[in-house]
Length: 185
Image 1 (tube, rainbow, N blue to C red):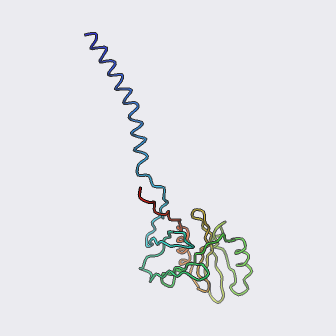
Image 2 (cartoon, rainbow, N blue to C red; image 1 turned 180 degrees about the vertical axis):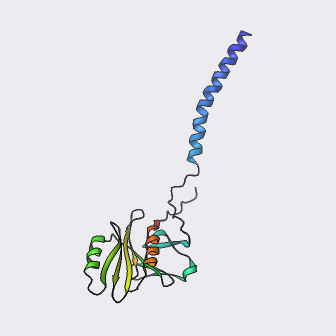
Image 3 (cartoon, rainbow, N blue to C red; image 1 turned 135 degrees about the vertical axis):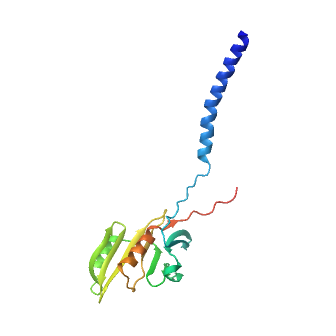
């Protein structure tokens, strides 16, 4: 009988030790599975995700869906990619470091398109009102998704209302680098 009690206590202790080792190992491996490192583009109502390639770099951006107009994506000879959805959404994206301070001085010094006010004046974003014959709004931003910087701005020569530019600014903020697909193992 004594032998059975000792054997039972040793078996019970071994089971406790085994349980103490097994649970953390199982939790560790469960935590490692299904982890995603790719950043996702936030979902915005009325917007859809579009894939772009600028200078060979795969990107994702949210733009208005087709309910506001026909979508056109045009790669320009100077390296910019222009995205148009109807007449109220027209942005240009090009690779480059950008210079917000220089752009700010250019805006203030423009004798034709007179500067009225900044709606937003941030280190990487300018959103302003100006006027030639009627009020118009424009924006200029520098976005760095990953290791490459991009200048995102409204298409030059067009006149936009404040709400239209707000939508373009929100779209520019969603620009993200798309991870390249990983080869199958």
